[in-house]
Length: 283
Image 1 (cartoon, rainbow, N blue to C red):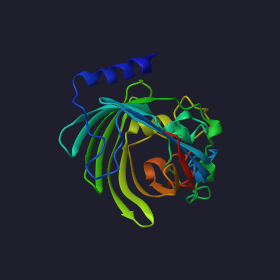
Image 2: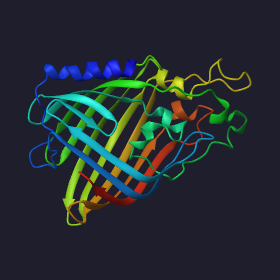
Image 3: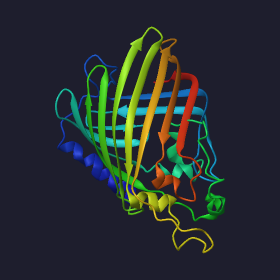
Image 4: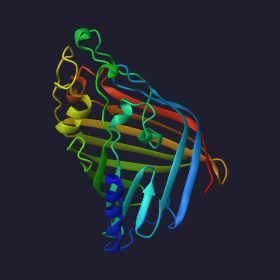
């Protein structure tokens, strides 16, 4: 019920907002008042940096979004946007925090995440085998809901974004943020997209999901979380075969700093994701 009230308040912002353009002139635009639904069938994998955590197989990937005049739903994010100019857009949006997806394989938030790779990073098991803690040894990590403010700049070929998220479910009582820059290339081989991103996560977020406090079994080593900086690189490719069918692929590399890797729960300093498949657009 708390999450429903938050979303209703979020959507009520539309009465004060002016309609925002979905994309810049000349870019691949999304038509308002229309549901877009597609499914990609193929194979890929997201690695899991947690001891005892399972890698996430990527076989069927949904892509669902709808943009009305004042509000939108885009692959798990619900929000409302305000056009500041032809190239600047301000949005308020909400989503479930994705951190729990490493601890619970079939967490609902994982369904909408296309972006992770399966090359398993280096393990620290030999260095600190006495301090290894499996996800099965700790208490269940909570589900949190975040509310964010997002600022976008875009033209035909470039996109920049800054976003700040706040936990409004009183779960981890912290924040996380990111800044990113992306570029598009339309070539004979298809549409290529590359981006670089820097993520920041507060000490309270890291401590809630990767810390080990006195509420855990007494024999486990203790760890207090601290702020984490996590750079990320992404590359994607898409080639239309027909009006509704496309071939696509993507890869993502996320680096974890020592605020994460010093936790006895964490065995790798990266999360990688890849996928190759065929997409069919229904709407």
